[in-house]
Length: 417
Image (tube, rainbow, N blue to C red; front, side):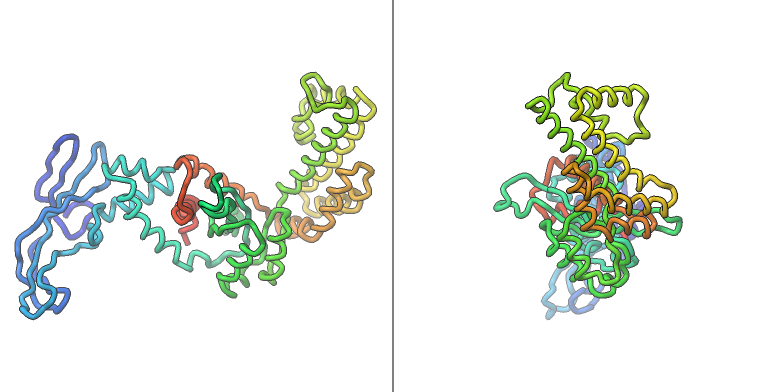
């Protein structure tokens, strides 16, 4: 028996042209015809070359495959060859363990199909044809959707060509954010569907069935009304939670809009090197608790440079107040600050902050749900998006959405129940 390959034994091992060639064969034994069951007659052996897991050098397995003739003259089968599924699939050229190794390399080592093809000494298509059926089988396993109680959603762009040639640029990704026994989130990608709309999200939820929808208790999302409508229409028992990252991002964006507007009003042009507000634009995006004394001094100097700059400082303080709600150790205190934001921002004389306040009031329940759901957020979803970006760059982009979906599900643990 060759280690890891049941059903065959090694006859001899050779090294030839940088290859390790292992000749194997199965032990003689009575074999029945797969068509009629009559004991078959041996007709010798044929050589079949297989690609195996590479070591220091590439490995080729030469399988001396047995050939049989059916003993029943009336059988339509006539002749056939032995099959050993533990060694290789029918008509395959890559061993079963090499396929498992390739899937592991794709999942854990950020490998590419082209890189695996070079290591195995074969072509891209040969490797993918061997791997794809295994990934499809895992993707069709409905058990991987069991136990999902917290669901995240986000979208990303998977290609940058004409949508008429390759379909929608955006894909909506559903992510399992369920916490483990220790309370940690183990994010994994559940699926990718074309489009960025509430219809795409609702359609996917509808396909999962009542059992899946009833088990989802929390749904995290970014401020997109389409996703919220889909949650309200299909997840009756779920609480929608507005993602903390996107809320803070809205506050930071409002400060930047105020800075640009004041810059135009006071100087009549966009920010340039040497302009007071332009020099502190990165400081205005930082948290107050992270600023050094030097940065605080630069900020104060920029604000004092013109009376109109006071408006920027007020906007920055508002964004810091919004940010502080998420940084409180006590969730009750964080909720109190969030409620103050809801009651005050929409009355602010600064138009950008007032608009932010109106937006948060429209999302009031989802905004405050963060403080009643144990700090649920879309952070795990953003982490999965990072993995997707990494693997898309490694592959230099994708042209086939089916292949893209399978690869990303594998990379982001979506095929693991």
